[in-house]
Amino acid sequence: MAAIETGRLVKKFGKFTAVDNLDLKIEEGETYGLLGPNGSGKTTAIKMICGLLRPTFGSVKVLGRAMPSGEVLSSIGYMPQDVAVYIDNTVHENLELFASLYGMTPARFREREREMLDFVDLAGWRDDLASTLSGGMRHRLSLACALLHEPRLLILDEPTVGVDPELRASFWEYFDKLGEKGITVVITTHYMDEAGHCQKVGLLRQGRLIAEGDPEELMKKHGKRSLEDVFLEVARRGAE
Ligand SMILES: Nc1ncnc2c1ncn2[C@@H]1O[C@H](COP(=O)(O)OP(=O)(O)OP(=O)(O)O)[C@@H](O)[C@H]1O
Ligand SMILES: [Mg+2]
Image (tube, rainbow, N blue to C red; front, top):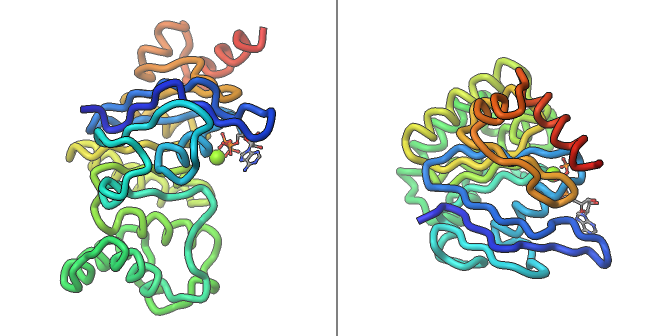
């Protein structure tokens, strides 16, 4: 069973087509990078996959269920691009809210909260209001909220934007470990070095999937030394 399968997925906003006949198949346990320039439809596609936005046409299946499905929600950890933390709540209260949404027991929550606060390096801010955190720190809190309930499928929309290099490296170390554990990780990023951590990348342009594959193989196939160069070439060809 694929973790995510979309069939001819389309999203139109008025006459504008943001996602155009997208056929994606992401296997369970895969780390998949969705790449593409600003406005290419990554966030729109992700929101449809999570069941937060209704497709204009096409189908979305997550873990074998047609979306939106209440049943699979607890198996998904979603970190939106626009940080979704409650700024009038403390760091702890934000995490607690997610724990109750996902029906975690108090004991399990206590354990996971400690682990996640250490992971995102916010243990010292547990009782501070989210409004007092820096932008990068809020981003880190949002990631902790998405990971808290140990989902089988993680969907992270630009999780490392505004995060300093040291922490970014530790995030990737963690994502790599999740992949080794069989957790599916879908990630959007503009950092090509990060795309190199993915087993498979998909390049979106104007809502269409214009290339897909193993990063190494894509580089070989296009005779390029970096994914960035592959990307630029494929995008240039697409524009011709
Ligand atoms: N609610 C909306 N109403 C109208 N147009 C929208 C809406 N949401 C997105 N769009 C448009 O759809 C296109 C795709 O946007 P989307 O946010 O999916 O891109 P993206 O690939 O995530 O970009 P970025 O890298 O900047 O995050 C853009 O042109 C955007 O302006
Ligand atoms: Mg986006």
